[in-house]
Length: 144
Image (cartoon, rainbow, N blue to C red; front, side, top):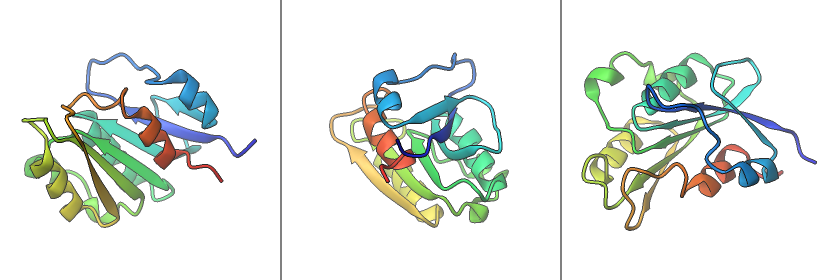
């Protein structure tokens, strides 16, 4: 079996930590955590948790991969993050039908993050973590 990937999952404040797809997580040999450790290789952040993910990634050059889902682009919050320090290969997932954080926000993040790929999910709103978990895992825990 391939090397286990430790993935920090940053959810919005007040959301209880959970595995969005336990079977898929197990198949990808990923271990999900809700607190930083030096074993973390990838970070996932959704909605306002995306800011925590960006902040942690900027402080941790060893992080290889980052996924940001439906996180609003906020210039004021960005001022608190050393975005230029983020070297991780980044996947941005945003819903095309999301009136709050759709294409405009995804494109803004793509322009600002140096190594980012934007994928718009057709007919999707902001609730992408569970339905797109397979895509998230393909990015943060790739098969070797």
